[in-house]
Length: 85
Image (cartoon, rainbow, N blue to C red):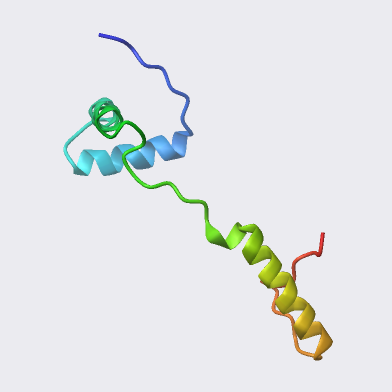
């Protein structure tokens, strides 16, 4: 049997332990389940996606919207008030 040492943010670990306790398992059991699913799926057992808000396409869209608003005298919302660089 192997030992696994991991460095995890204290708050994240506590939050996860609370959820896992509600499910009736400890951190070690949850990690074993996760690793078994990694093997079964031959990869991460869930979809990983970057937040589309931060995509290059969305950044360009927001800059274009900001430019249109400035050119027409509209008010640029603070969420669109991003730099052009």
